Image (cartoon, rainbow, N blue to C red):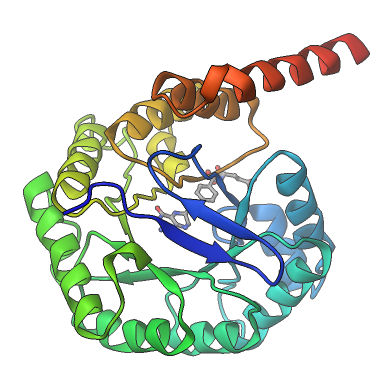
Length: 291
Ligand code: THG
């Protein structure tokens, strides 16, 4: 099988092509009340300014896509996710990743979304496959498949590969092509298990070799509970790009992470003449000189 499938994600006006020959696509992580206290507090008050600002900041920092999560405990998630999406789409036109585990919220979001979104996510659990894949097909979306199932997150790369295979197969049965399935090998913190990073990287390599699909990760998860998260996130993300990661969900406002992604793209032969690397360096110099 081709080892370099292209996933196309669109908004009303923009198209992003995720592919191992193209520059890495950073999916901005910050619109997420579970991962951001400021977003949680604002959404609890019905205030969407924080979300709008996070959308603008991440796009200004160079994120070609944004992840949008509205998981506020006790809230009406279908209505809240729609309202968050409306606010994001009012201030930016980048394609979006719709981050919810609630099929009702997902359907509400798909009804509203303009373009072909990335659905974040399904996984190997029967319940999830049966609820999410028909919606992905009906709305012509692409989907992230998490390498976990009814038994939890498998401990070995081979077992995670088997979950990826199941998701890709079940998608194909519904007419969703492999290029529209993005696999997430799952990133757990190194603070709890020092082998967690290696298992994730090996899973990515196996999945790419076998299926050639695109790979995403919640890359900032790797450092939960550890000091100097930025340095750890940046180093891990560069290694993961070598292992096959093409569209990390991460924080584009962290310069160390952005620089690591650009350096990895250059080292992987995805930055002709180092143009993006040089241009980014010049911008950083300008910022330093202005300070
Ligand atoms: N895979 C997929 N989707 C995902 C994840 C994944 N979506 C959610 C999450 N994991 C990725 N998003 C985040 C968002 C924020 C952080 C990490 C991952 C984060 N936040 C800081 C913290 O918690 O310390 C910021 C705190 C704050 O500002 O309040 O690290 O794995 N498919």
